[in-house]
Length: 496
Ligand SMILES: Nc1ncnc2c1ncn2[C@@H]1O[C@H](COP(=O)(O)OP(=O)(O)OP(=O)(O)O)[C@@H](O)[C@H]1O
Ligand SMILES: [Mg+2]
Image (cartoon, rainbow, N blue to C red; front, side, top):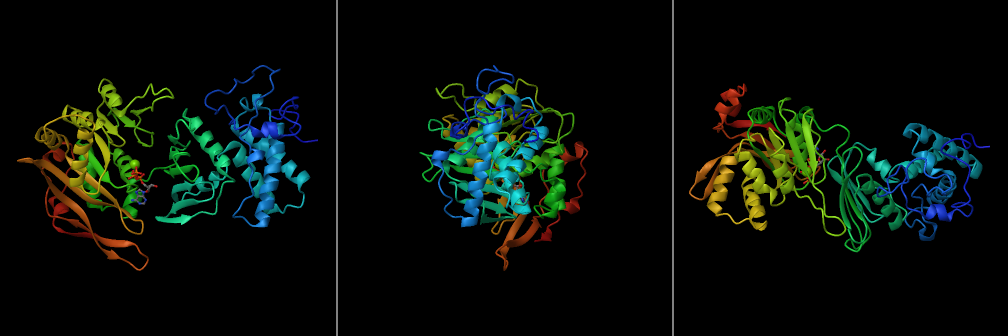
């Protein structure tokens, strides 16, 4: 008989949820207690039939894989069949008690056995692939696993079950990976969001979550998304990009890094501005490595994705309203609370609304060294975005008063851009120096000037020192950061 079948997790079959198979396979319940927090505790009543354990495919909704060849279809059918036999044998009560590695090995043994008995004609590669895919279906994120394991992929964009795009090394391309159907994709989405205590269904069809490795996850499903569930994943990898990585990618020059490092150490207030996917969060993570180890940092995000290197970090996350529309906790609430938590610095992942004003006020009231990011295309644009966010939130403040608050709160604006063909660069570092009449005055210290596009479609240009020395040099000096005047001499620093 099957090796391991007599032991956990493959206990004797109960009288329900088996036989014909579909009843067990119908349930979208996730394993490891992930289903909306309602999993039965380990060791729940032995007489209750175990809940169907795995989000197995629902036979009634199975459609043929349209875009695959016949061999692929055969493979999928076999996979489904073996998966169902496996689901049939799992004892959910025991799954929770077993450590994940042992569980994986146990399941692997059974799947291998089933492969050999159900279709002994599989060749070695096919058998190996089948086993891996079934393990991913059972314990992981199904077809997504393949993409999640590829560390060259930055973004995954799933537009319905059959159209999946990835951004690989700066370029967007269509992936071979597909889901069986909408239902299959929904099951995987459900498994991901329920892990972080969120849900997605017709009443809350949009959800933000994160993957176990911290990558950002967003899903929007029908009826809002017209052509099936849409998922967008921003992969951060297990290791955030370091300053050396970014230097190697020529995202900025050593001179620019020296200034940014000084600004961090001297506790300047910094706004990182940039378009979608321009590298703002990455830059924030990287710069955070310069924060002194004894500083207490509080981060506030909608879906936690910052990976700060310090020990003394408190991470806070906003919460959407529940199904009755109650219980929402906004970024504004969290900033207010953070101020009572003795922060040295506050970092808001991204300013989107009313929290902007609280952030600016915190910067002005002794929490120097605070940072945030904002969606904008130029440093000047960033300031007007902040202004707009405050006025859209209904906070009536005379424009001049608001601007002078900005001028005294913000020291530096770092502009990130994603250029044509994929490269991401810091395209401007500008200092905010004060007000003249109703206008905030800024001066650019370093910039990147795009010159053209090369034969592979990639933008190229040069990093420039404008020749202007920042006015905050004395602050850098007193923080022990000595930058030579030569650093700021007007010149082209690097061509790329
Ligand atoms: N200089 C760089 N070179 C190469 N890849 C980069 C660079 N900076 C960031 N990336 C990668 O680009 C992707 C987008 O980066 P990031 O999430 O920091 O952008 P963002 O501006 O915060 O995006 P969003 O607006 O969606 O929040 C990530 O996969 C990141 O690893
Ligand atoms: Mg970001």
